[in-house]
Image 1 (cartoon, one colour):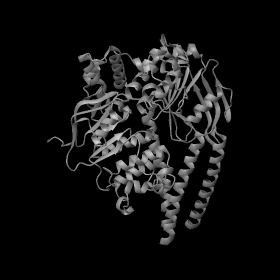
Image 2: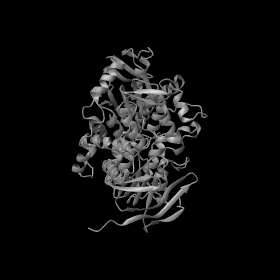
Image 3: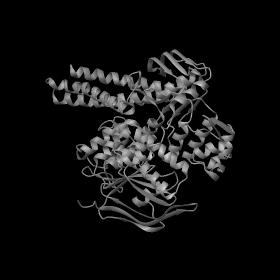
Image 4: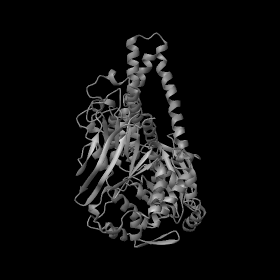
Length: 605
């Protein structure tokens, strides 16, 4: 079989900025159909590499050669969508609906990202103005633009996608279901793909090659993320390129990969015998019995006990009749549909530590509970402080299991190495601020941790360091994250909110959650289809049928808007002014829904 043709070649390409050499005489190629994942620390040049391939930046030396006729579609970290245009025009230009609506690929993308062909999850569907969309909605529109085939700035083709997709953090603003859908969709395309992402599950599910950007060089590995972990550990062992500490960490992660769920290694390309030999004497990542013993000593037998609890956001009931015990040493991954109440549940437990009662029922809190909550909101720190100083203002030393750690050692574990500990807070990037926020939180020596999207803005190397750090942390933890790999790595149990006001334990973890969500969607689609077909079985004239269809589409949009308002109410549950505004909007939407349903029933009768 002949080799796949090359689409793009980088020939001895170099790129430098005043303070750093990003790429130093790098030669790489992308062939048709390849799936390449790009990994490396933040700031090492992953995004720059994609820009060079896309020709939106020029190299200082060397050249980027693209095979004639190759079309390229790029997703950057920020979009260039015009605020005044509609979603429809951003995706399809001036093309008539019949030119794109019949395309299975377009229907799949709009369904996967926006819930249907008319994009009901957006405020005004495809007619929504870009300027009024949230950051997450804009991101999904830009991703849809790339996936439906908009290449090199030209309007989308509805027959063929781009030959090469360049995707910079495409999983941002997607939930676990959305990430699983995106991986499946990309696996079904013929396009070559180069993707920068810190989502290691996504890398393993999609990629057959890894580019590791380090210190101006790019190292290539066959296989997905699992294969990369093994091959990099082996290369560094043989060449003595990395210190022993990092090699132990890589082996530790590899051991978890091999012992973890079957789905984790289903696409691994490395030899099983070699992997087993490498990890033969590697212990499990955590000593669960010892950690529970430590946690019990610190916390006692009780952490949180919920008895017949109701959780609300405004007037909306998110959970009811909740009975749940969270004991010492428990590590829980909490997953669920947007608006189901994940953050509200954490807030209810946190409120109980300050003697605030839930809407109904009772939450019992252990006497020694010391809670720390890493939220998605950045801590406001004095910009004139230096990194180490800001950490030492919390504490200079911390007891970590059996070991004691200084503030400097903890900072180093979270990526602030050497001179970076003297960086001014005002000069930190978003990812660095996130790491600093986490370091300050851990220095306070909490025995209960709530981690709400802790992986935001962290690169893979920092994530593995954080996971290793948490392996030795003796306490109770709840993790809410769209990063499937991180959740499965640090949590021992998975609990789910499926939108039915109940909390369920899922023995098979996130895989079971996705199965249940797929079943729920299938079950809800069947009655909707039956309702849609019911009127057509009678002798209804064409005009009536047309109005019925129009009402059904309006009803779907209104229901999605109602769901979005409920989600906003959950988010702003502690802001009375915002809640009043949202409740007014909710009332208007519910009245509109009632009017639509009443008219639909009149026509159906």
